Image (cartoon, rainbow, N blue to C red; front, side, top):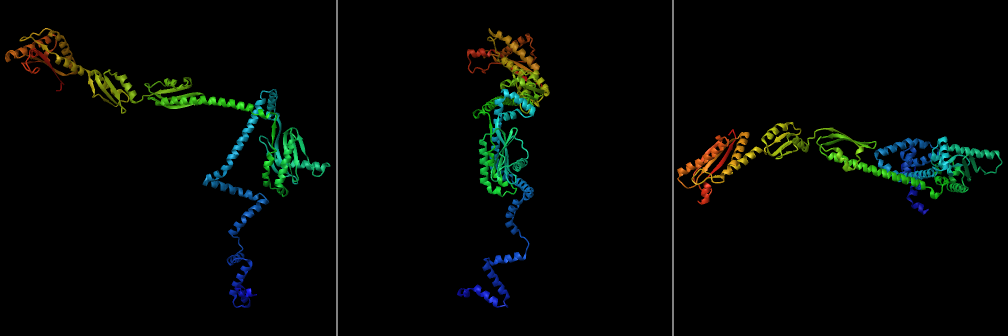
Length: 594
């Protein structure tokens, strides 16, 4: 009792019971006492009172009860799942629109193995079917089977598989014994199935009919049923049974497989089978045991199963490789031909295609461009498979414009012509005056030429004129001492002089140039100045008279006399005296306007 007396809470409670005037203090003390007795904190106790006073359901309460409520509802029926289908679909759509990577990452671990397994299964079935078909395609029985395939409407491969089949478990059923309901159903590929629930109900009805109509021991059941090519084997367990629908003649060892499956299912799902109320989701775990019952066996030996199939596939692979090699090679050659065409100036490819094993190409071609057919042979492409159609057009590329200039103007070999990218025609060198005048008129008619520059083009007559001028001025005629007679051998120079002067005057007249030729007479130092002046003039007049006698118009000639000078020889020597007894020539040419 000493503990009680020292306890403040007990003391407060005692005082509160004996005093009616301090109501509020008593209530507080009672609250504290209740919290101690119920092991609840005063704040939580206060919230409990508030909850009791407010009967409305709070969201916090629903969050605690919702998971358990969903589990309980799912066990009752499928209505909750059906209701949530649309909500889940909308949630998935919203997730995909927001970020499809989330769903992709979630499905990635599943899609890969599932795809590989599906492909592996399909290839295995295809190889088996192909091998069986090839092995029996040329056998005597194959003709009979082909007729059967045509009569029944089935494929030849399907008939071959059926006739070479030893046995095949096509369907497997897991049925609840008491209710006769279907727990699980598996079917092999390429097998048409009816309603599995109806089949399970039929088997249950047959067993009930036998048990009700005949005297059988309790627990006994039908072991097998046979309908034509189909056999149904049934293996029963305490609470469920396995029914296998088999085509062909199964061995007895298959029963051991069925027994082993039903035993493992009871060991794994005994409680679920016993408490079965109609929901079959819990029996999904039994599928691996049932899959072991879906076995098949063919007559062909295992070692030779894929011999024909591999040989056939090998032949197909070789054929495809050969075809691919030649196809790719032809494509590369075709692309090389197109590339060559596109790189050629004056050729424009507008359309190219391949059809019916031939290549069709069309476009435009300048008449001066290279012949497209000559480009086929370097690419090793068969010319017979190339069908081309080219429309003519004029290319304004400089090289083609240059060719047109050469064809139209036909420039002499002494003229070099070049067309730049702006269409300007540049002509350099020497050409006859007539050609230059014609070129200045005709260049306007050449497509692509915008301007004609002939500043560096010299008339060839001018060069000839300069040549003859040089020949005339280089001619020197020497005379005897104190006379107007030419020394021996000088007369031979006169014909060449006449020829050069005649051509020079003709060309100058053709070019419209004004010409003056000076005939200069010279003497040496012998004699007086007056005498030398007359002698030099007489020598020049003699040459002038000779030229006139040769039919040369001397109106453009002028006589000059020059007395002794040391122009050529600074020192008087016998040679210098001879050199000063001479006649020389000087030629002058001016334009008419000047």
